[in-house]
Amino acid sequence: MTAIHLENLTKSFGAFQALKTMDLRIEDGEFVALLGPSGCGKSTTMNMIAGMEEPTSGRIRFDDRDMSGVSMGKRGVGFVFQNYAIFTHMSVYENLAYGLRVRKLPESEIDRRVKAIAEFLQLTPLLKQPSAKLSVNILQRLAIGRSAIVEPAIFLLDEPLSNVDAAFRAVMRTELKHLQRQFKQTMVYVTHDQLEAMTMADRIAVMDHGVLQQTGSPVEVYNHPSNTFVAGFLGSPGMNLVKGTLVEVGGALVVDLGEFGRSAPLSDGLARVARARKASDVFYGFRPEQASMVAAADGLPVFFVERIGARTIVHAGRAKSSVKIVLDNDNGLEAGMTARLDVNKDAVRLFDADTGQAIREA
Ligand code: ATP
Image (cartoon, rainbow, N blue to C red):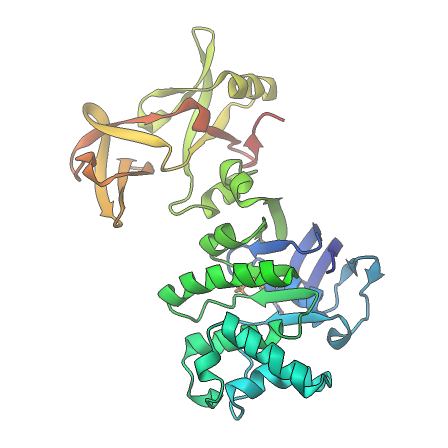
């Protein structure tokens, strides 16, 4: 097992800075997801860890070993890409055995390991099949098996599930987590899918525009986003962010929600921090599942009701500002009605409207 240290890492392609700065320590045996939208620098970071790209500045260490100038082959990393690299002229068995043959392991050990990983990834019935005829789902499972079988200390996966269908993706999320628990590798997983990151990772590193925005456990990052980008990127739907102004009313600090036509109270702790910051313009944030809505004549206009199966997303608000609230299916609201919104004070998050940074208790 190996810890990965990324220290003041940057990467430029000509004049374009793909990675502006990155400081991240990934512990031994930890599963970290690099999460962010397309083009934010996830793959660039991953390619530098793998040794496919050299950093423009900064340093990568595996434990106390500096990786500068160390080739990919000598880093001891397993890498699975979005586009599975499989030898289509070989059988499933031979594809799995390949890395072990290169390392000249005894035939009996190769056979033992191939059968074990095939069993783990449910490939046993396919071992004799030519790989050329396999479905995309199975090919990606085979690609994962082929990298995992050599038991690399570091396992890097770059969007490995983006080409597979939704049902299979759900299965693989569980299997990959099991795989990592079994082999205890240090795993770095690149994805733009917040659900994948939330369900699998021990820790999520959220990136945007070549900058690391926040790192933390899935629950920490979800519950306490450090800025409006993270708040909106995590969750489906993301956090509601309503533009507001902090005002004192009768000795209490509240948020005037402008177009929403009402003032929202704050918890004592949040009010104290907001007062100390002397912020005025804010975003009032809350998760869609941490609010309630009931029909009321003086409420917000409901303009869309989206049924998603187990629950319903109610879209409500005014011209420039709207919210999405996740409710039980029997909520009784329909488009065209008006409804009162209630947000639990403890669920409220505040962000500085100018910087987007969270205003929160230390
Ligand atoms: P995606 O999921 O779309 O791959 P990403 O977050 O992994 O997104 P990167 O592939 O790291 O993003 O790319 C970050 C930025 O760097 C992008 O704007 C990309 O166009 C640019 N980039 C990446 N590789 C090169 C290169 N070899 N030459 C020039 N620009 C590059």
